[in-house]
Amino acid sequence: MGVVWMRRTEMKVSFIVPVYNSEKYLKRCLGSILASTYKDIEIIVVDDGSTDSSPDIIKRFAEKDSRIRSYRKENEGPSEARNFGLEKVTGEYVWFVDSDDWINPDGIARLLKYIKNNIDIVIFDFDRVYGTNRRRIELFKIDNLVFEGKNKDKLLLKLIGPTKNIMRHPYRMNDLNPLYNKIYKMETIKDIRMQSLKKTGGEDLLFNIEAFYNAGSIEYIGEALYFYNKTNQSSVTSRYYDNDQKLMMYMFSYIRQFIEKNNLDVEMIKALNNRKVLSMLGFVRNIVKSDMSNKEKRNKIIGLFNNTEYMSAFQDFDFSQLSFPWNVFYLSASKRRANTVLFMGEAMEKARKIIFFKN
Image (cartoon, rainbow, N blue to C red; front, side, top):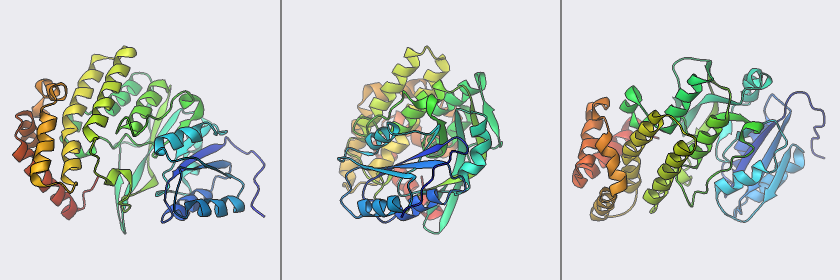
């Protein structure tokens, strides 16, 4: 006989957990949510056509606790699974959790004050976990920041692209992007859906741009409430994508259209331009981690250099904002020096592994 939860005490929080062949990590994920000290929750588990033992694990958990509502669908991808989950939400707030990650059981209790105050989005820190080691991703230096009005516009600007001193750290450009280190009021995101990974490589970013734009109030608390598993080498962030450039170009175009459609400040266009340029690092990292020959890797980079629309972003870029090594890397890219860009990209990846600075 499973545990039955009937009484509503506070506002319900809905967890959406997309699952695809996650048998190695799924017990820890679901267990951490069920261990939540805040009990008024529902866990919407969407099995995206798993072929391993994940369905059995889900079934066993659901039989023990009625707060788990499980669904199975044909495999389409995590974005489609999350969209499916959004259609099933009955709670006032939503927290997206990936099936190979886990949460702090006190997470919602720490967020309760903001939920009670009807804050539209609450952002928090997270830990990247590499086996037995962890690295805290601290998004802001000041705790308990409130973003409303013009301050919210500054936060949206930061999300769209890096500006000023933030450009000194290209590796951290995407720290604000993820879904998992935020809790959303359902009313704020009810009309937003994820873009498919088949169309874009930035589905989290695009979702959050719309969510931040819709939100009236956003708050940040400097606590790590989420644990992002970087040990899982089968995750989407650990794979080489042959169509990476095409996916990212779609993302850039989508953001540009969003800015123009909503008549946003010209600074947003500049921030997007900075994102385009700094994304060269992501393109090169994707190429470096492939099993292609050096010649093939070099040709991939040359192919990117031949994209006139993308390379035009370098014309209006302020290289003085970069630290010396990054200045060399991006200036080399602007001058289409494929050998230098590839060499530096490979050197940086090796250095990252040595000093444990992974992304």
